[in-house]
Image (cartoon, rainbow, N blue to C red):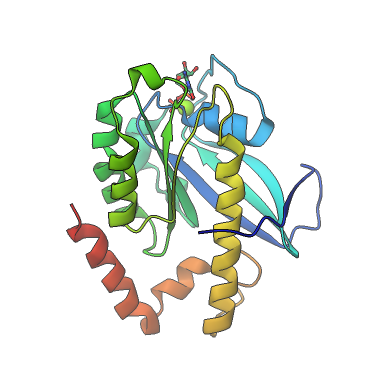
Amino acid sequence: MMSDEDYEILPDDINDIDCSFKIIVIGDSSVGKSCLTIRGTKGKFKDFYTPTIGFEFLALNIRIKEKKIRLKIWDTCGQEIYRSLISSFYRNASLAIIVYAINNKESFENLESWLDEIKNQTHPNLKIILIGNKSDLENERVIDKNKAENMANEYNFDLFMETSAKTGENARLIFIKAAQILYDELLHLKENKEFNTTDNTSTCGVSISNIYESESDKEETEGKRRRKSCCK
Ligand code: GDP
Ligand code: MG
């Protein structure tokens, strides 16, 4: 899908950012969300991750073509079961990374309930990346790659990849692809819409959530909702 390779990872401390986006990382406990987030942003693998209470985010700055983009990546810090109580976690998210582990059948089967949660808590144009993590555990694999790929197609996800936080395979690529997806969405919106520039977290003068809640998009929005909920 995304063929353009014009990107660059930028230092953490730059302050002339053009756009900033909130990304949420969700999925069952122990599938490797925290390890992937750390690996993808810091390049490290921490075997023992001690969850803190609540949520925290890690930032990654990436230049995509002419735009300097900051990804604010929110991790659940082991609070998965309380997630629906904490709507601030979902508020203004532009993209969700949904993670299962290729050696954990239940984590794949629970994807549907994570999708329901997204539908209830976020806006319909949320971008979605599906990740099958722990690809290094090939000998324990229980989820076929094709099966997950089919699901990603059916649900119209923006991307599917298998990754390993342990070996680092594709870990950083998740976030580069995320930045490219959000960059493309910005261009698309700027070409096609009149929008209100006064709001809010997704900057560049664009609030993706507000645009897609507007009257003119109702039909498109509901079409997308229907597609998502009827595909089993
Ligand atoms: P979370 O609950 O989804 O945040 O999962 P964690 O990131 O805390 O990881 C749970 C466990 O899986 C830890 O023991 C990690 O060391 C391990 N783990 C995470 N990612 C991988 C991976 O890609 N491969 C393997 N083999 N283990 C992983
Ligand atoms: Mg965690």
